[in-house]
Length: 291
Image 1: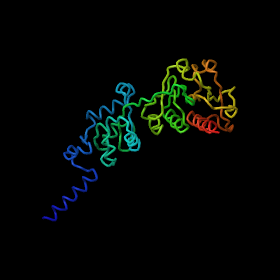
Image 2: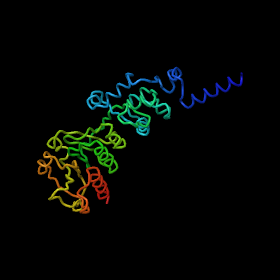
Image 3: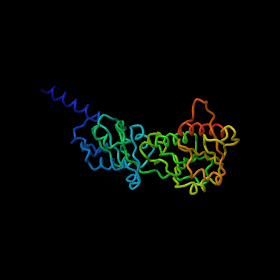
Image 4: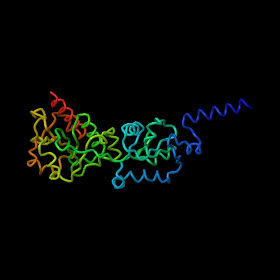
């Protein structure tokens, strides 16, 4: 009997070390800040996550939804203001990192899926206060997006912009929300680290570009080869959607003193998509700015 009690105690110790605590124990585990074990999709915190799937609620609460263990660990490690973290039973995160969140709860997979915008949330979602990064007053290298509506493309371009060392990204017109969860994923979290600005029109955006050479990616007739651009110093690269440049931008090209450039591709390919073309030009600009 004594050996059986010892075995049960050992198993309980092992389960606790691995995080598999019974619900009552979870609520008492204040040191790890696991105040809750959530078993229902109607829980108030889960409902808050679900509300924040929509832009208007994210804007109202001034938060972003971050999904995936690696991204959540990154924002915690960076010291971002993390309002809540929801973690699956079988996912391990450093206790010291989790202690930085204002609230931490565990939940089964089906609850995580309800809280997330993706079918595979990788066991972790968080609500993070929207970063307030000051947009530079005198930038030397910017990316501007002209009506790019696909959040995956916007995210990929922000990610490459960060890799290219831009000072900021300006989203003009009907661009996808920079803090859409799909944009955040596509940017690999860069959308939380790069200064962003949104403008309704190119007339409104123009003062940010006043001291910069404006180079517009354009596959249309009349564009020059991008290699003909002599200098990429003090430059804003503009990338539009695959459907072409917006009428608003076309009408502003003269006022912006813009140079339209194309990428030379094989004749078997009609064009490159916005993320590929923009990424190529950003990284080529980085190389040429450093030469």
